[in-house]
Amino acid sequence: MVGGAVGGAAPRTRNSMRLGALRSHNSALVLDLLRTAGPEGISRLELAERTGLTPQAVSKITARLREDGLVAEAGRRASTGGKPRTVLRLVPEAGHAVGVHLDRDELTAVLCDLTGTVVAQRRAPLDLGAGAETVVERAVREVGELVAGGGRTGAVLGVGVALPGPLDHRRGVLHRITGFPEWNGFPLRDVLARRLSLPVVVDKDTNAAALGLAVGGAAASGTSFAYLHFGAGLGGGLVIGGAVHRGSRTAAGEFGHQVVQLDGPPCGCGNRGCVEALCLAAVARGDLAEAARVLGTAAGNLVALLDVDLVLLGGRTVAGAPETFVRGVAAVLEERARRAGGGAVPVRVASGGERGERGERGERRDREVAEGAAQLLLAPLFGRADG
Image 1: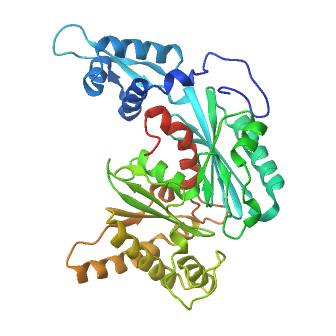
Image 2: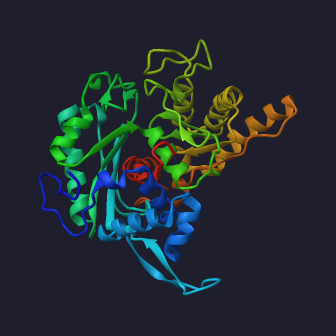
Image 3: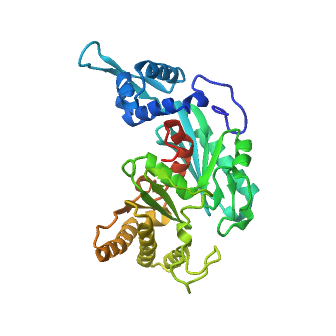
């Protein structure tokens, strides 16, 4: 139900949106151009030229979008001939999406407008091993309070939920999450949709973050990049040719469980010497430089295998010492590139980490996963479901 309230139905309002119409290919083309044009807007003629649609088709689409409150006039622009052109802009506050990151020990929820800008957020402690009923109850409560206190005026499109995998993102069913096998087979999407009375989309945390970064312009359009998330655990999201690569079973990007030391310490996944286990052990003893070196070694394997253009680092552990991790990972990649006689793949902190807020003690807090989870609802409206 679109435009509904958490926990029950709400009447259709002036700001409610007809999702069926919005999800048409042509509407998505127009909306995406309006989104990228920003507050300055874009004329109908420019929309027709850049989409390849006829001026009549553009006029019908924009009229419908204006009726739904998604588009408004942004003034007039001088024309090269004839009367000035009316310029249209997207109305960001006309719709919102909730993004929820269920981490192993913390819940982060954000309310985003149509441009993906965060307008409200909440954080709460979470024990992912406390059982499905407890975790679902916490998620429902936090989403309800976020929406109620967000000061929004537009419809709520739905809720995107991101959490550690493995899982089936098409059906919204969890598999044996590393360290939390009790979640195996739990239909999280359907349970939350029923409790919230809103559409729900579920995906792996790293896939959601990668989608958000791709849509948000963290890399040039069509770029292939790896997003490595180091928080309570370690995972990866892949964007290949501008699209998120999930694999046929949503199993792509299990970066943290590649074995890099055959006789290494045991990992929660059942193997020994996984990069996640080694990195977490280094962090536990306060050796962030060693954690960065191990992370760089694993990143080097990924770069060699997929030949990506860019490596982005995120997650709260990285956010706590971004220079150390960028420097350490980059040093490994540069050394490998020198031996191969080529240029090194650039490494930088993901944009979500750069703009993440600071906690009570001043530590930097990442939220790129929660923002990416909101994009699970927003991106399809702009024809960007895969980045």
